Length: 297
Image: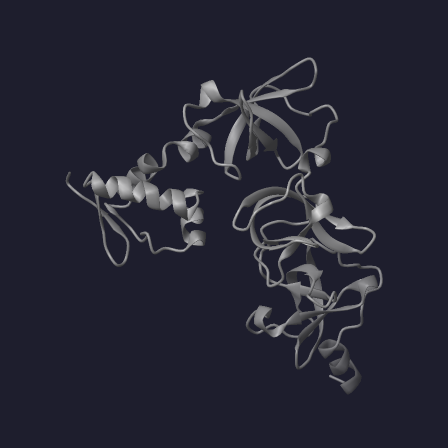
C-alpha cells in the first residue's frame, strides 16, 4: 500500500457532515492516538478526547467506538465508554454527593465529574445523601449538561398514545395521598393507587406496569403487571425467592456494594440490610463472608 494510503488509514479525515451530540451516546471514529488518550471525530464539535482510562483494549485509529459525550471539570468536551445513569432528555433518580450553598448540589450520575443541580433548578433545597428525581437537559446559556428537580414542568402533556392494557416502564417519582406518581416511558406521568399496590414503594424505584385507564381529562391510571409486582413485593420475600431459585445461596451480604444490591434487588443498601437483619433474626438465613445461605428454619 502506498505511504499516503497508510497515513489516511491511521489518521482518518474528520467527517464534517457528522456531528457528535452532547449528552447522548454516539458512535464516533477514532482519528488519532496521543499521550492523553484517543481523539475522536466529533464533526462540527471538533476532535473529542477519550481519556486513557476509558479506552477499550485494542482500540486504534479508524475504529468506531460507542461513547457518551459530556464536559469535564475544565468545561472541555470529553468522551467516555462508561454508561451514565442519565442522559440528556431523560428522567432519573440520582444521589446527592455534595451540597454547595451558593452553587447547588452535585449528583452522582456514574461518571468522573458529578452532575450539577443548580439552586435555581431545585424544587426545594436537597440534602447530602438524598436520592432526587431529576430531568437532565442542556442549559443553552452555558451549553452545559445540568439537572432540574422541577421535573413536573418537563413532563409531556400532549394526548397520550396509549390504550388500556399497554405495557410501560415506570419510574416512581413521588408519593401522594392516593398513591404514587410514576413517570411513564420517560415522558408522561400516571398514578398508581396505594389501595391496589399493597406495599410501600421507594422513590426512584423502577418497575414494569400497565395502562389501566385514561380519563377524559387526560390523566392516566396505572397498575403493576406480574413483573412489576414481583419487583416491588416485600424485600425479604424477594430475597428468599432469589435464594430458593439459586440453590439456597446468594453472593450478597451486608458488606456488598450499593451498586451490587441495586442491580440485584432494585433497592437501597439501607433497606437491604434491614431486610437481611429481619431474616437473620428469624433464623431463615445465615450470613457468610461470601454471601448468604438459606437455612432449614
